[in-house]
Each structure stands twice: as C-alpha cells, then as structure tokens.
Amino acid sequence: MKKQIEKIRSAAEKEIQKAQNSQAIENLRIKYLGRKGKLTRLIRKISQIPQDRRQEIGLSVNETKKKIQLALIKQTQITKRKRKAKIAWVDTTAPGQLPLVGHLHPTTLAFREIWPLFEKLGFTLVSYPEVEWEQLAFEALNMPTDHPARDDFETFFLNTKPNPKWGRMVLTPHTSSGQIREMRRVGPPIRMINIAKCYRPNWDNTHTPMFHQFEGLVVDKNINLTHLKGIFDYFAKNFYGPERKIRLRPSHFQFTEPSFEVDINCPLCRGKGCRVCNSGWHELGGAGMVHPQVLKNGGVNPKRYSGFAFGWGVERTYMMKSNLKLNDIRILYENDLRFVEQF
Ligand code: DAH
Image (cartoon, rainbow, N blue to C red; front, top):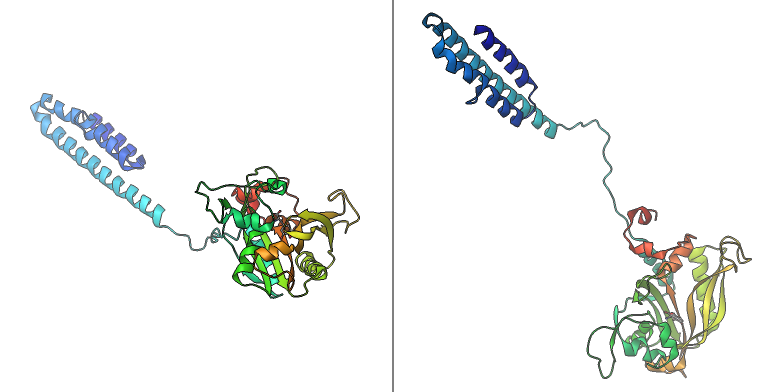
C-alpha cells in the first residue's frame, strides 16, 4: 500500500505542474482528492489494514493529501501570475505601431483644390440646398414641364404635396438652380461658385445617383464670351497644368445662349489624338452666356447686365487631373479603402 500511495503522489505532482489553467487544476483536484478520487479511494481502504500498520499508513496518506493540496495551491498561483504577466507586460523597446490615420475623401480633396482657384478671382462660395423646387430647377431655367430637354434630367421627386407657386419638390438634379437663387439673393454684380450634391436616378459605370457639381455664375455689365474663355483658360492652366488648353464646342442648353461643351486637351498627346483620348480632347462640362430670360427670371435686367455660367462634375473634373481612367466611377462611393487610400 505504501508503494501505491507513493505512486499516486508522484503522478499527481507531475500532472499538477503541467496544468496551465484553473479548470485543469480543478480537474486534477477531483481526479485525486474528489469523492471518487484516487487518494480518497485509498483512504477508504485504511480500515481493512491490520491494526499494527494502520497508523503508519494513515499518516502517510494524510501527508500525501497535504502535499497534493499544496501542489494545487502553488500551481494556481503560478498560472495566475503567468496570466497577469501576459496582460501587463509591455516591451518598451519594441518598434511602435503606427495608428491608422484617415484622410479626406477624393471628392473633398477636389472641393478644396477647385474652390480656392475661384476664390482668388473674387468668387463667392455658396452651397445651395440638396432639395429644390421644380420651379427653380427647371421652369426658371427655361425648361417648362413639357419641354423635351427636361427628359435628360431624369429626376427624383419627393413625395410631398406640390406647391402652387413652386411646383413639386425634387432632389436637386443640377447646380444650375443656384444661378436663380444667387441672382435673387444678391443681384449683380455676381461672381458665384455653387458646389453641391446633385441627384439623378442613374447607376452604371459612368454614373452614381448622387454626385457633385460646381456651378459658376458671373453677372455684371459688359460680360462677354472672352471673359468666359479667359476664366476657363485660367482654370485649365492652374488646375491641370501650364501646358493644358481648353476648347469650346457649340452645344445646346435651355438656360444659355450661345451654349458650349468645354473640352480640355489630353495630357498625353496634347490634342493630337491618341489611344487614350481618341479625339485629343476630354469633355469637362457645359457652359454658355446666360439666357436673357434666365436673367429676367432671376430679377436681373438683361438690357443692363449680361453673364456667363458653367456647370461641371466635381468627380469627373478631379479624376481627369490625375489622368485616372476609372472604368467604373461607382467605386468612389463604395467605401473600399484599398481604392480611397490611393489619393
Ligand atoms: N446644368 C447642366 C447639367 O447638369 C450643366 C450646365 C450647362 C451648367 C451649361 C451651366 C451651363 O451653367 O451654362 O447638365
């Protein structure tokens, strides 16, 4: 029996030393000292031992029990200490971890580059509402309800009661309604840049239902086409680089007369035509001399004043700067950090 006790003790101590957590330690306590534990079972047999050896065996069992208990306590302390050390230990010599630092979205970067160029020329920055009256978005810009030009402006309508004077409410389909708002708000002379969100129900690789435009409006005495051309040249050279040029192509808009599409020469072939641009030119957006009726609608006398206006996409204008050909512009608003981080 003494041999048995000794075997149990040494096995128990070895196992306990290997236990790595409180659950493992508790399992060993049960295994050896529990009601059906190995040592407990031996203790029960003591009564069967002849009287003369009983005391000796009894003492030995008790001692073993104490030793196992002690080993359990010790191991509990060791595992606790190890756990604490794991949490609290800091290696002050290890190289630091760079915190994740965010940065501005490309569209915001675009705002911040476009706007100061006009600020230098004395333009006022405004940002007119994302929700607009149909009257200002269309009628005041020479686009009555049944005019076919309005088909190009597929529009989100708000589910509200039409106002007898202002019509229905729409999500601003273009920044041009800002022209009317600014004319009515301040009157001439006007130099305005309206940068705002626009909405149209399109979703494909060249359109997102929400996008941004910047709209310029200059109204003063004797404003003519040369002013318009001069401002665009200034913008092209300062935003895109000294080698860049713009070109005007005749076009049609209801709210300008004459109207133009504004192109910028391709940075690769400088207008000769290459595989990237085909024609040598990239389209920036629309522009023109403000239609006399639109001036009137803004409360400005077209006999005394004239003006020009332009409305370009912020995203497009910016993408053309980095000469980045996105084959799907929706990626701008998909929150994919792998893309956004590149700016
Ligand atoms: N509002 C037009 C659009 O969204 C763009 C535009 C064209 C704005 C000509 C203008 C302009 O100010 O003169 O397609």
